[in-house]
Image 1 (cartoon, rainbow, N blue to C red):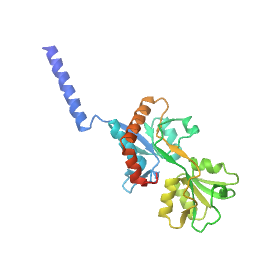
Image 2 (tube, rainbow, N blue to C red):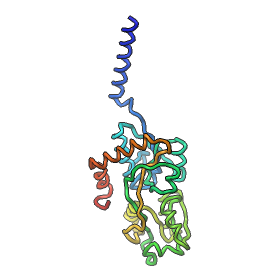
Image 3 (cartoon, helix red, strand yellow):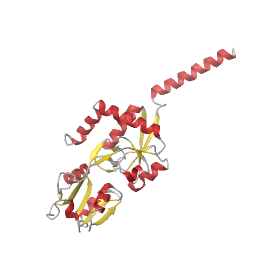
Image 4 (cartoon, one colour):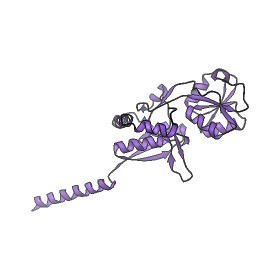
Amino acid sequence: MRTRGFKLATIAVALVVFLLAGTGYAKQVLRVGTDPTYEPFENKDDKGNFYGFDIDLMRMIGEELGMEVHFQSVSWDGIIPGLQNGNYDCLISAMTITKERQAMINFSDPYFRAGQLILVRRSNTTIKSAKDLAGKTIAVQNGTTADLEVSKIKGTRVKRFGTNPEAILELKNGGADAAVMDDFVARRAAQRNPDLKLVSDEPFTAEYYGIGVRKGNDKLLEMINKALATLKKNGKLDALYDRYFGRDK
């Protein structure tokens, strides 16, 4: 009788687990850190809802993995330390893969190609290319590849800000001669600010975004790469590109 009771109890537990899985309660949560100040890749609306290309991509990856995605707002300068400390499982934040960052965290396969563009006030006629930034005051988001690239140009005075919108505001207010940022972000800023314009529509760098994963978490990295490969193969990633960027990407 004890053996039969044990078997019945085991079957009952298995049935409960199955039913819970069917209702979504057994879904594992994937915690994702992001700096939601970089439209059109990541942002938050007035109600605190996350939206943007990276946000949608991460949700698609979650679907492929059968995981529920929970986003966490993180300031840009703390996003890599937060990942290293285990505050979240991975990060996505239009982050370019660089050797310096690869020394601190691992990256997924690239999912997006980007580059730097120069934004100036519409009245500006002196800055026509990156070489014209020498001797000028440039606004950037601190610690971004825009910051790194502009800092290489001799004679520039770099003003660093915690968020990209702050860098754009500094340019609009006349506190900087130009602002430098990723191409699609710069294009969106030019569209929304009639008093600003792009110096050129051709980026002066070539960069690739990746999803950051803590070193040692090889299993998650493998899972994310597999999901990305599936999304590329089945056309869902291309469809996401088209929805956000048309045929420009």
